[in-house]
Image 1 (cartoon, helix red, strand yellow):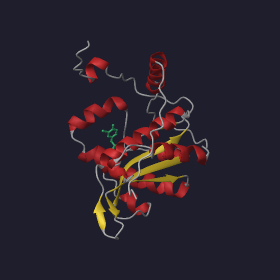
Image 2: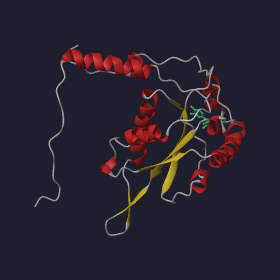
Image 3: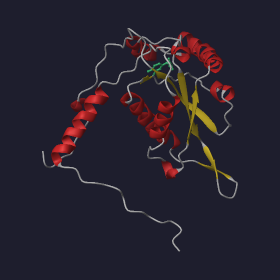
Image 4: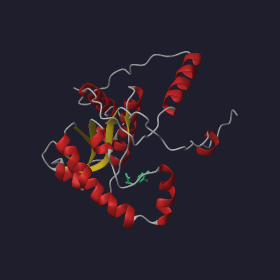
Length: 225
Ligand code: IYR
């Protein structure tokens, strides 16, 4: 008996024209995604957050250990606690810890230590990276490429939120150890990202920034060019 069975890949060929059209449409849709700091308090059904988490959890990941825990919060008291703790750290970061080389690149984005989105957004999703896993024999072993895995999962979560017509923001309070305490997560889990999820506020704004062109971000070694 084979202990590690394989299944046929489910895959259907698309025409060359369809591929280009789909890729163009996908890029156009993603190009519309923006990070705003202005969230509405309007509620979002839990099923939408569940679907974004499920979408994020389809990410390719190290040794298929799926080393993530998504903590989804729609709870005023917890959101206020998180905001208070995040702002306490962020006040120190912005006023003392942040070197000028960092603050000069944040200036155009208009970020500061005040984080109203943590209490305005109906949901806050905190992504925890699992640094260890329990082996079948009960011992603890490492996970592999957990940072990369969770980074990819977060990207897919963000895409899912965007495609359903909502907005999210990747907030990185630093340090973020307080999240493990407030959310009662075990020691082998480390908070990576805090993502408020909701509708944009009326009149929500975004910084006037531009994305690099293909030439600026990519190098091709293409013998057919
Ligand atoms: N962690 C802080 C500061 C911050 C850092 C980067 I890099 C950003 O792109 C934006 C903000 C915060 O979340 O405000």
